[in-house]
Image: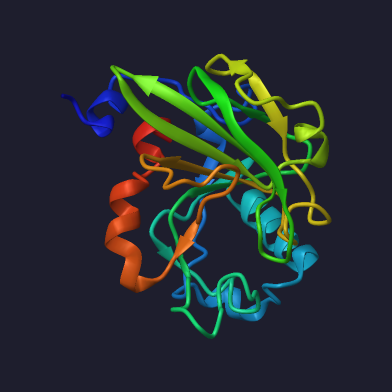
Length: 224
C-alpha cells in the first residue's frame, strides 16, 4: 500500500487559502528561537506581531508568509496550554502556518467531510477550528484548519462534504483566534487518537518523533 506521502506526490496546485494568490507571492518566515529579530518585539502582543508580519511581507513583496513545520518557537511561553508545570514544555510546531489578513478565504485541501469543529477557547488556542476527514486509496486521514473566524462554524454540520478548493471558512482576527496575528494553522493528521474537534499543533521534544510521523509536513501536499 502506498504511503500518504507517496499519494500526496501525485497532487498539484493545492491551495488552502485564497486561490487567487499565486505561490510566487508567498514568502517563508522564520519564527524560530534562532531568529534574533523576534527578541525585539513583544511576541504576545498580536498588534506588534501583526506589524512584524506585515513588514516582512512588504520587505519581500509578498502577500502570504508561510512556514513553521518542526520549528522550535518561543511564541507559546506565556500560555498555560503549552506550559503546564506537570508536563513537558510544548514548543515545537507541527503544522504549517500561513500568515495573511483576517477575512481571507480558507479552502478545503482535498475532497472531504466535516469530522469535527468547535470554538477552542483560551489564550494560545486555535479559536474556531474545523477538521476534515479524507480517504485516499482506502487510507483515512484528516486535515485541521485552525484560527478561523467565528462565523465559519456557525452553520457547520458534521459530515458536510467539501470539494477540493471549495471555501470552507475565513480567517479570524486576534479577538477570536487565540490571541494571534491572523493566520491559518494547517495540519495533516494520520491517527486522530480519539480527538474530535481539536488536536495538538505543538509538541514537546520528548514526543517529537511520534508527532512528526503522525503529522507529515503539510508542504508535501501544498508544494509551496
